[in-house]
Structures are given as C-alpha cells and as structure tokens.
Length: 283
Image 1 (spheres, rainbow, N blue to C red):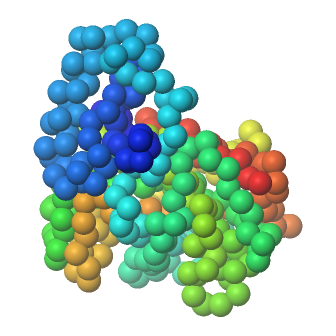
Image 2 (tube, rainbow, N blue to C red):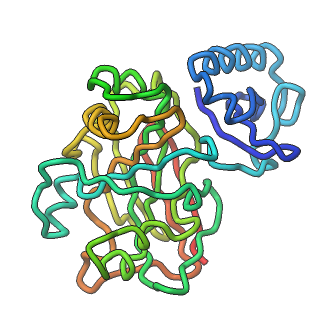
Image 3 (cartoon, one colour):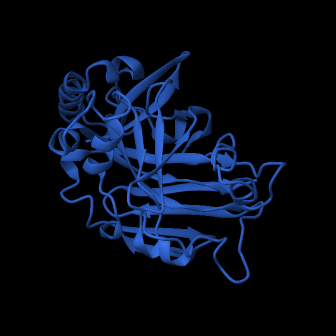
C-alpha cells in the first residue's frame, strides 16, 4: 500500500492512495501508536474504497491535488541520517570508507513534502542536492538484532537531504548545514515494505532542471538498513515513525569542478524505482 499524510480541519490524517483518490485511515499519531493494527485498518479501508470505486472526489476518495500534505510521520519523529554510506560518494568526497555508520540527526523542522518550495538560507548560498532512500520504522527497537530491525521497517520513501555546504563544511560538525528549515523533503508517498522486494536493488536518480546529476543503485550502500537500525538501537530506543535516511551516491554538487549549487527557480527531482518522484522547487 501507499500512504501519505495531510491536514484536515486542524488534524494530521494518514491516508492511503486508491483509484478514487486519497482515503483517510486515522490521525497520524494514532497510526504510529500501533502500526500493525494501522496497516490492517488501511487494508480494510482500501478494499472498501475499491468496492465503492468512483471518480476522484467521490465518497471513496479525495483528489490528491486538493490536499495540503504534511510529513507522514509523528510530530516528534527522529530523523537519523547516514553520511558517506555509498562507496561512490566516499570516493568522490576523497574520504576513507568508514568503519562504523556515520550518523547525524535532522530536526523535524527540516521535513517538507513533495511539491513544497525550499528556500535557500540567508546564511549560505551553497545549497546542494542529495537524493536518498529513507526507511520508516514501524515498531520499537531497543538493543535489537539485525533480524528484528529488518522486520521493523514499515515503509520506504524518497528523501532529498538538501545541504547548506558552507555551513556544513565550515567546522567538523555538520549540524547547521543539515538543519536549515524545510530542507528535508520526503515523498511523494510512503510505500509499504511489503511492496519493496529488495531495497538494495533500486535505481536512484537525482535531476536538476531535467539534467541527471546522480544515477546509481542502492546496492552501493556500505551499511545496510537492518545493520544501521540495530546499531542505533544499541544507543537509543527507536520509536515507530522514526526515519532512517540511508545516504547518497556520487554526483553531488560540491565535489564538481567547479562546484555547482542550486539557484532560485531550479527544480530538483529525486526518483527511486518503485517508489516515485519527489519534486521540489528552490526559491
């Protein structure tokens, strides 16, 4: 199934995509309070919508274009990201292959949705793209094994880890450069893990104004999702709705000669096979 979240009457609602449009399931935080039950509820809702199928906007669904999307995770979700997790990117950045996952944190205030504009920060004009696969946790993990971590993945989506390189590279700490408001778009939907047969055999591509900047497969990851989730869960208890952003392949802007950065009016697209296209305009 495919999920997204939207605002409705002051509530954040999780819905499923059906032929007739977006069908509401339940409030976002309620959804993540018991993901297994929420998946079953979503299936029932989707089946009923299929029986009542009509045109978008019928009783069975609402047109996606009319909805104001919100990030499809709880308000308190942790966004845990990996740096230097593709061998090709390690090489282009002239770094050593890390011996352990390089984990950094994005604040929830950085999250944005498909179709939203992203503002270049006043403090740094060097905004760069990073197309990535993200995994959303569906069950608590505390000192988990890799097998438990693998079973915990609820869904996958596209993520653009837009980075203010001047701020990021000014010091050894990446926090400011990775936490400009609204620079973490995710979407266009969450794709249930049951629909992704092999998350390490997906083509991933980033385009800027239709020019291909990154083109790779997720099989180039150094540390895979279960290993990283288990590793993190040994330090902090992961909760349903937390997001793991798995790193970017080669082709980012700052390693080019000369460096290339995003400009107002640019459109960035991150496309991952089987998931869809995440599209955002830079302003």
